[in-house]
Image (tube, rainbow, N blue to C red; front, side):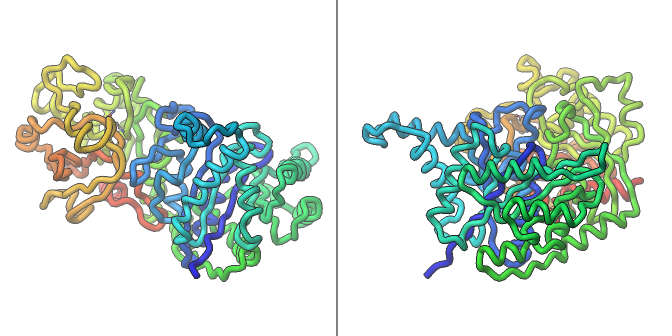
Length: 534
Ligand code: GLN
């Protein structure tokens, strides 16, 4: 008989934004470190089909999975923590669930039945959750339900997980509720009432949490009597109440949960043996706390009003910093307001400059200036997607002398479109209007890229425009080397400047493959260059 996948459901209580994603990822990391296979899924109650079209300043970054899913940023945490590639199956919004059900209704799948939230929507949700276990190949599936218990729109999801609990043996499901433990400053007391109400709300939906993570956002030690009170009033043993206090780094959260023996509670309820080995996490934590260096990296982007819009970029920098004993300080620079006049003031004490991805013309000229500043002043430069495109536009304008050089995305009239659309490629060979997901880059010998990656790189894309091959020779002759290509489509994936300490930019997004235990090679190389230049 094959094994049975165990399901761990994560819900949130009292307020949103408590770090359920980090709690779930940390549990995943603990299970993974016990030698178990783990898959994670995020179910979001909003009605957009996916975050692909949502404003990054409102929703944060769009995380891209290897199979080309445009997903919620929590998936980035999941992958960085559990070091496993997830997929489109890992992310469903209510919109996508309803879309499938309504399409089925139009196709006549329901054979004249009245189509309802229960059972049709709930069954679709259950089907998506079961899909994650790929026929019980996975030991654990961790499912995070977005939003807060009590939200109207999350109810079908809560009902679906209740039904799963009812269908499976008791030892196959576990519920973790992450809720805010409030603190009243005036009296200097922790208050458990909101948590009690939150657990009551869970009970009203037929779910008794097995683990309660009491998330405290103040730097006060939670006294034992508070744990006792939560345990007594929420129908939990004291060891089922875990304190989630602030950590100086999210990568310390698995250690904090482990120290409170969360794995024993999971092992008991799910009837499994767990022997976590968090060596890599302890090492990372020690390195982080003992970091001797500090570097300042300027991220020049246009969505800086919400730093979550560049979450994987900043986490990738931090992770590369950790393994190089270096604290990375980020200087956020708004590309929309960056000009010839203020650039010196904004960028002068940057140890490195990073231009991340972006869509649309706003703020592009500021990014072009940033690439020029890094090139001329020989400051290490890392360009990501649009960050590569602007580096080539800048080079064409200021080194090759094509003053009108541009991308056809920003100026379709320009005579020198160094970045352009390749209709045939994008539609026929690459399957869609955006080039999305994982592609293999062949690295050219004798380049900086080769030192960093070896002979190939497998990284993820999310863009529409490509480097114009017509200009390759001219660029190479003038000192901008093409150092990586996608062979099948003959597309430029990596460029670098030879006469420079470190100037490397990719058409793909290297930030999506960083893991706590394995910094992405481009970020690692960038941070190393920044340190040695400093
Ligand atoms: N807007 C550019 C393109 O579509 C770059 C996209 C990005 O940086 N992700 O090609």
